Amino acid sequence: MNKGFIYLLLFSLLFSCGEKAEEVASAIDEANFLLTDRQCSQARTVLDAVGYQSTNERYIAAYATTYACEANYSTINFFANDLTNLNSTASGFFGSLAGFSTSGLMTSATDTDFLTLQQAIDTILYSGSNTTSSSANRIATFGLRNATNLNVQALYMILVNLGRWLNYHGNADSLGNKGVGTNAEANNCLYTYNTGGANFAVVTDALNDGAAQSGTCNSTNTPYNGTNDISTGDPVTNKQRLCRGIVLLNNFIDIIINVNFTGSNTGQLNTLATTFNTLCQDVTQFADALCDLRDMAGCEATSIDDLEVYTAWLFERNFN
Image 1 (cartoon, rainbow, N blue to C red):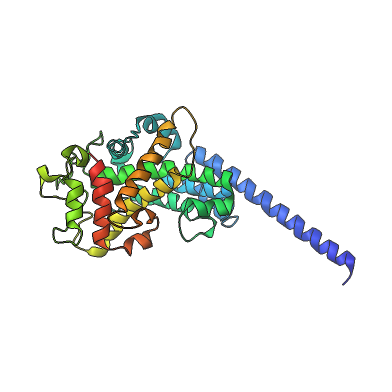
Image 2 (tube, one colour):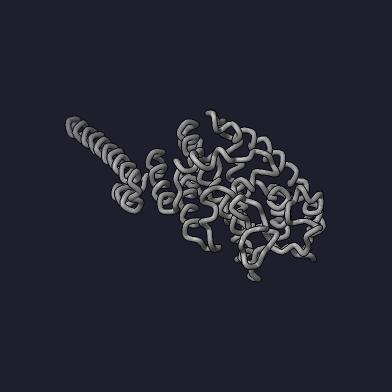
């Protein structure tokens, strides 16, 4: 083959790749500009036009933001109004999330804001064409620095969406106090536990070990009435809606133990890493690897008896 032709072909390929990289970079810049004006769907249209870039950290970050934008999420609002109110103690953490400024936006189990923000989170969790969510997978795909940027972006959105899930299903008031909100059913627990379940004795151990630890869901306030939006009578729906909270919390734990936060208003996040690592170790004595359930499919494949243990020991016991 003619050497001149080979050189020309290589040059053409390199030039084409350079042009594509510039096109993608330009689209990301344009999308970010549109997002500053909250033109959410327009920004995603611009990104779609250059093809989905699953291993480009800047592209993934912008793409996730288009969904977050539609879901009434704002990082500026999160830092200004919510992060400073985060409580890093085990007994205060969930209540502080439920009291976030946007937690009351969730008004149904199929709330559009909640589900759309979950799309934003999943864009990052499964970036790089990963089929399972883990910080390790993202580091392997993007490198430590870029993966950390994505992890932090996902973490903030997870905190907000978990706050929405807790506020709605936990019948919380505007301050994040569980069981005293305006739900017509007036539930005091997240879930109605199966009194004949295989692990019910373990569940009651969690709920009855001091009212101060399990808030409104304890032996002084029986029956253990959960929200009808999780205890629906349909086992498949029950698992799906329960797992939404479990998967959010487990991805939060996975990220927070793999990121070292710096800054004047992020110190509590490092404290939470230790707190929840310890809580997960406590739960493993009852049901193995529940804190490793970071994907909906794996969570929904887990027995409801084990999911009840997780919910009672991590959520109910610490959500006051």
